[in-house]
Length: 239
Image (cartoon, rainbow, N blue to C red):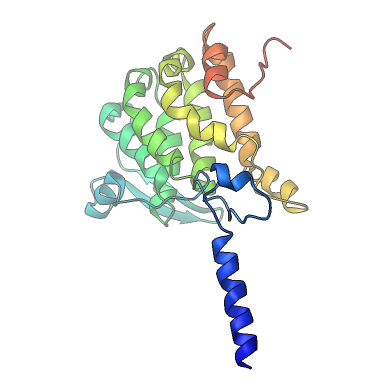
């Protein structure tokens, strides 16, 4: 019995001695255990560090809207005329709210963004610089649902008024890094792929569609700037 313990102890000691630092000169010797490479965390989902300003405003009752229910589900109802609302004040707040995942914050933010973009009538373009940080922070959470929601809002933003696509080009370096990481990601596998596509939640396809919209509406410098940030992207204009 004691002999067996000594043999096991010797084997453990030998194994410990055979481990070394990855990529060191010693690691290229045979029969050495370099262990598993550390995780980079590049695709790990992040959590909101603190409540969004959108959530705080909602909980204080500062938004001029309410939640209504009908036979088709829940929707928001504005208490003011959207023609008179201050876009510089409200639109960035609603874009920040796209990072929310809990009800009713996510519902209010999503519907609010699309309502404001539909009724912008020339008021969205001047606010574009204020939308970049909320978009960037929401994408950097790497939450599948949040990323899909933000990309749909970004697509609507690009086409809601003339010149917005071109106005976004200087901000590609802030918006596109996360898209570059996930452009080949299809979260749904097998039968789930079709279901995800029906709901518009195939992240890889949403990213591809968004980049194509950016290229089509971004002017002559759009493609080269997209290609710089997303090397695998191929032009949809010059095929």
